[in-house]
Amino acid sequence: MTNLAVIGPGLLGGSIALAARRAGGYRISAWARRPEAVDELRRKGVADFASCDLREATAEADQVVLCVPIGAMAGIAKELAASLRSGALVTDVGSVKADVVRELPPLLGVNVRFIGSHPMAGSEQTGIAAARADLFDGSVCIVTPTAESKREDVAEAGALWRALGCRVRELSPEVHDETVAMVSHLPHLLAAALVNLAEERQSGSLDFAGPGFRDTTRVAAGPPEMWTEILRENREAVRNSTQAMVEKLLELLKLLDRLPENGERQLHEFLSQAKSRRDSVRS
Amino acid sequence: MTNLAVIGPGLLGGSIALAARRAGGYRISAWARRPEAVDELRRKGVADFASCDLREATAEADQVVLCVPIGAMAGIAKELAASLRSGALVTDVGSVKADVVRELPPLLGVNVRFIGSHPMAGSEQTGIAAARADLFDGSVCIVTPTAESKREDVAEAGALWRALGCRVRELSPEVHDETVAMVSHLPHLLAAALVNLAEERQSGSLDFAGPGFRDTTRVAAGPPEMWTEILRENREAVRNSTQAMVEKLLELLKLLDRLPENGERQLHEFLSQAKSRRDSVRS
Image (spheres, rainbow over the protein chains, first blue to last red):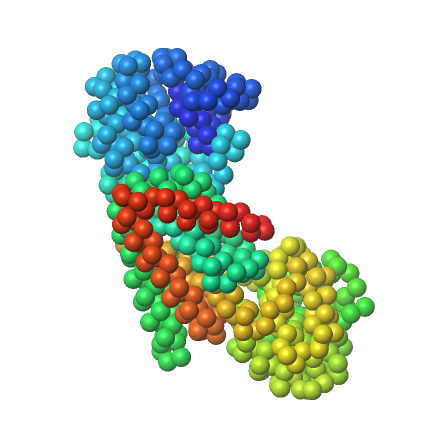
């Protein structure tokens, strides 16, 4: 039995608990800040043990997953340093990694091992009510070791995510942040921009949205607090990817201008390339 | 019984035939250019009658729906002028309307009525194999009358689309083209740009795509030929909406620069506004 502590059981934390239960071999404890959330965890039987007391929820833990907002992680880590048993492995689900991976280990202390993680799962939904045992099935979890990380710790974090259903990949925290800026944070910004632009330029146009628009903008329904934090934390990489998108769109504008003459072949090539790349993405 | 002729039964045409069959009250004939497609229509029993001969497929038609690429419509219309019986109603499923609605009526002649339509349904899939009787359920169909259109003809076209499962809206051809540039053509261009940008800037990054990226870029898997034609036909409105998106992204870049100081409140407001607008979109 591995004692697994889930800190902050919302959509991701709740799904981790449910997926660990499904996998078997875990004794799951959960910590939530609000007593009502603890009551709900108990009612639903999501964890074997639930408490508002961080020390109580983590005293026996072999592995701890931080599923709180990035801004709350440092405070939690300081408390954990005083309560975790020596040798415990801590990981997290934060969407931005460089700062977290640099700041948390000194706070957790020398007796606790830390490996950053980012499961690329979830949806525009939030909260324990949306949690599912199969949320991670087939999704990628990026673990983000540093030069100081021990291979056995990286392997242990990877094994946990695999047990929960993920395909595991490794990136350095910095490359992780650039990569998710491109495949997650910029897409979010574009979706929100598209919704706002459509409404502002042509009031009522959202009434004409078809399935394409609904897919393209689905993420814009995600929680604004969480996304403000993510975009702030990763602002440099998000800035670079947004700037790159502006340049790409300026190229496309030139191409649209040349359409009556010789732009058609290039536009077709551009769309064909996008299609073949998109077709290669695992669903 | 209404004699309904479907010209070009791919995803949309095939779904029209299946939805009309489900609705009841239609005798459905279908025309396809290729003999193999006619064989498939016959094998699947999608229509009551199928033929490669346009005259044969439309001789009895009360209503005709053109489901061929926009570039093929004029040629078909000329042939139809010679074969349709007087008083037949012709409509179409073209994604761009101003040119089609201006060019087709003179070709069809004075004895044939024409009302443009654009059902906002479909997916990145193509072909009769993807056709479904419920493709149009709950989707919007925009009919695009002009100042010359008779109300009874507009009503008849609307009634057909309602019978197939659509909610029907009316826009002038010009406003239609501006609206779909914003809610369909720009989203397509963005999706394709995002896929290409991610791969070009960070080779391999598509391997890290999560559900958000997959949703946001799904339409980029659509057929490049069709989308090249759509973007070319509607290039002016697509240009305007793309230019507007560039300006929106430049605003966001400024906002990202001000994040450490006072930009956070504004970013949160921007995301909150997008969320509440996106939440209001019918799914």
